[in-house]
Amino acid sequence: EVQLVESGGGLVQPGGSLRLSCAASGFTFSSYEMNWVRQAPGKGLEWVSYISSSGSTIYYADSVKGRFTISRDNAKNSLYLQMNSLRAEDTAVYYCARVRRRGYVGFMDYWGQGTLVTVSS
Amino acid sequence: DIQMTQSPSSLSASVGDRVTITCRASQSISSYLNWYQQKPGKAPKLLIYAASSLQSGVPSRFSGSGSGTDFTLTISSLQPEDFATYYCQQSYSTLRVTFGGGTKVEIK
Image 1 (cartoon, rainbow over the protein chains, first blue to last red):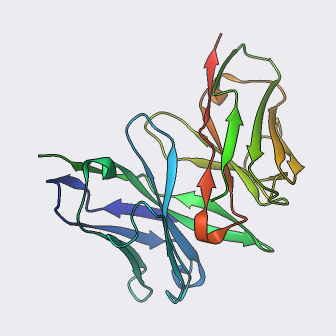
Image 2 (cartoon, chains in turn orange, red; image 1 turned 90 degrees about the horizontal axis):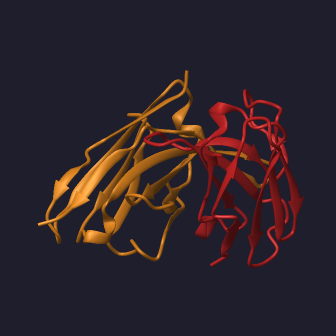
Image 3 (cartoon, one colour; image 1 turned 135 degrees about the vertical axis):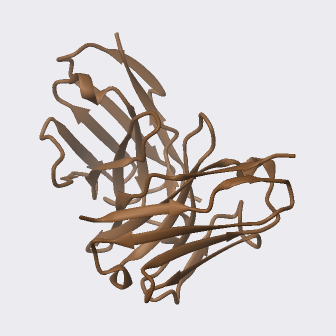
């Protein structure tokens, strides 16, 4: 059974840092691209960052570029999101999601349960 | 960035109704369009990928259509468990994946 379990969320002050983790199991993690997606309270879904299966290709949303860093450890079946210089508008539930492709079309077929990040003084 | 516009933003419907949700892209995205369902407090769930392919395990009352800029998600006969928020998402631009604003389906 495919499982994605996020951890590391919590309350942090503006300007602070937090590192999210996503533990993957039930599939060959090293073969899959991954995304982080977030959802602010009462709002819609916002894509945050992408990493290729090898980690060699990385993309970020403009809203987090220069502040967040995505990484992965395929030996540990884990995905990470290092979040620095956090702002109130980063407050959200953060999901990790597996990317699958049919041809060139990518889609997120499995999602974790999410971890809540609250940025507040 | 490619903008995704969903309509309506919310709708009220009864069990058994046929429901249609529309998603429009700001430029052509071919068939790079996916649909997700999200219930309160839960993670999104993939329903449809590549515009019209039904994800394994998803009931056949869900269907997707369209290509280019205009797409539709249809629920042929609304069931109690279908009351949720639905999101479209384009993957044409891997550099900038974007979601629609969501459509909340409520009980009439």
